[in-house]
Length: 286
Figure (cartoon, rainbow, N blue to C red):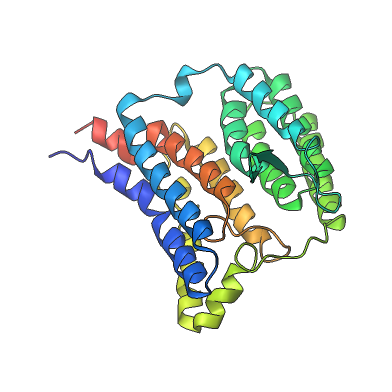
């Protein structure tokens, strides 16, 4: 009996409810059709790309982590060359679009920190990325990335004193980021989309919240024994990105308008499907 389709279905199913809920909310409140079509389109392209890449695995295991990390950090630095909004620098302009580079490449950087065998390099990369997020500033990414990086670094057999330093740095950076929280007003179909869901009905809002709960779930329930640390790290990252929306004006991942968190989420899903899913391990043994 073949289970070849089951792991794929479980993985991309997690994004569909939130994607469709967001599309319906934006259409219901007559948000520009081009916006929700873009969200939906990138979601469908991501699902298709995910299925195609499964035929040419492994993707992440074939690349050297150092060039990927270097390019990622340079892209993060580009946010300071772009025009900021009220002294907030999170976006890079590509034509008429602004993309949040941090939300796209944070999962990619975490995956390659996990691959780094040199402990010092892994620590330095983690600290540098957190500092960049502090200067953007982006409290949600500081908190989510710090927590995810701590999980990875603590598994690299570093000394207790270094662990304490990393933990204190992560906590301090997160406290500072939330203390310096930006004052950008929310956009109702981006940061405030759950409020719009509540205006449709309480039951629909409840279902919308459940659809968001599904997003980090695969990284906890489908983690293989060999890749559990990395999978849990990504799960915590996505969970905290979602949780941050309750305390500040941050995009609601996948459901709210914005292609950046959709791309970032698919990076994690592709990694999980490539070799992090215990269902994939079970498939190979049948």
